[in-house]
Structure formats: structure tokens, C-alpha cells
Image 1 (cartoon, rainbow, N blue to C red):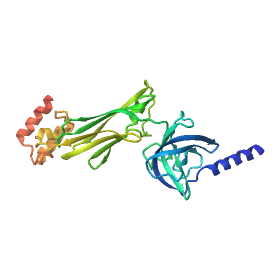
Image 2 (cartoon, rainbow, N blue to C red):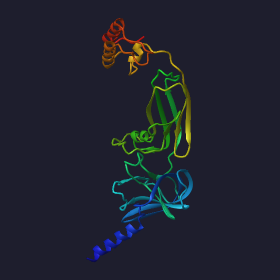
Image 3 (cartoon, helix red, strand yellow):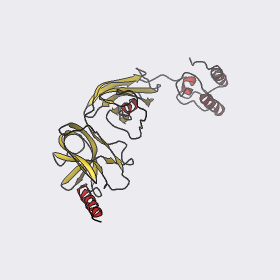
Image 4 (cartoon, one colour):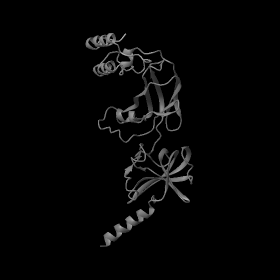
Length: 301
């Protein structure tokens, strides 16, 4: 009986020390600081971090802020995913923190707990990981409005990862802001599951499809935790009128494949204009030409 009372008292103490989140307001914060001390209780754990620089988000209410790495009392119940805590952190280490800033009156803290419904990113406190070199490649190099544009981003990090999959997972999905495309090289994406362990690596690469873009000037930025690492500016020029064959070649392999020929037959029967050809329709002579290309698998000229 006495043992149960002691356990209950410890749990109640842990719950009392765990920050209440039922009525708190949440905003995202990203900052760099110095890890001061680690506290672990039955109901939770946290790092006390001395703030050095806020990268994005609100200015915390205190110079030293508690980063909650785990707690058993974290309503709403939809929550339950805990961010990444770097096990190599020691007191006086510089750390990067990305999480939810919580404020309630005069007190504030940061929590690494998150909900998949509220955010696609996994929060963390970790030793600094920066991009030491990067490449952004565009294909084709001089795109027109007729081209499907592909973007390849390759980044080498300052810290090795246990497998290549995880290094690639550090490169986020591309985000578009007007005529700017942004890839962030520090986000950890929870839907990426890496089971097979390969050689340790520091390099990750992802390929993005930007599709066909209107004529204009665009910029691609690669950002790491604190800065823009590199950027590329490119111009899309107005392309000439597409031929019927080029317009039908949706996968850009320079051949008329089965689905593309079926689409051509449907357009020919209905005598509807082929999209992208400025109103051209498929005549009997054209459908015979397409039939030959399809049967022989010849390259479109």
C-alpha cells in the first residue's frame, strides 16, 4: 500500500511539473542555443536551453527556455508523436531547436510533441547539422514553356547519417512562393521510414518535378537551418507551337505509347483540337501517321 502511494505521489508531482497544454497557444519556433541541463522525471523530460538566436518564430519570453522532449501529460489526446532528441547532446553544447512554442500568461516553453494532423514536420533538439556543399541542377538547362522541368538537389551535410535514405529525407518537399521554389535541408519527414542500413553517408539527393511553367524568371533556393545555402535563377522562354505528336507525348519519351495513341483516337473520332497545338485537329492522314509511329515505336521527329 505504501509503495502504491509513493508511486502515485511521484506521478502527481511529474504531472504538476509537466507544462499544461490544454489552453495554451501554439506557434512554431526555430532557434539556436546552448544546452544547460537535462531534467528527467517519471512523467516527462526536458532540456533547459539558453537562447542565442531566433531563426524564425516568436521571441521567447525568457532567455533560458525549457524544451520538453517527452511528457505523459500532453492533451489533446490526438497528440502522441514525440520529436527527435539527439542522444549525443551534453551540457554546454550548442543545439538547434525546432518545435512548438507554448505561452500561457507569463510562462513559456517549447514542446517537441506534435500531431500529424497539425504539421508534416518532426520537431527536434539536436547538435548542429549544416549543409557544407550543395548543387542545384535544372533539366533542361534552358527551358521553354513546352518543357517539363526537372529539378535535382544534392546536399552534403556536416554530420554523417546512418544510411543514405535518412540523408535524402533531410531534403524537404519543394515549396513554391510566387516565382520562387524553396527546398529546406534540415526538416525530418516522419513518413520517411528507413530500415535498411547502408554505409554512413553525409550526402542526400532528391529530384523534383516542377512541370511546365509560364514564361518568366524563377529562383530555386536551398536553405539549411540558419541561412540560404545556394540559389539558382533561371528563365523560361516562350516555346513555339507544338506539333500534334509532341502534344500527345505526355511522358516526354519522344514516342507515341499506348495511352497516348488511345487518346489520339478519341480526339480524332470527336474531331476535337489537340491541347497545346493552337487548335489543330487530327485528320485521317495524321491518324495514319500516328498509327505507324505507335506500331513501329519510332521516335517523334
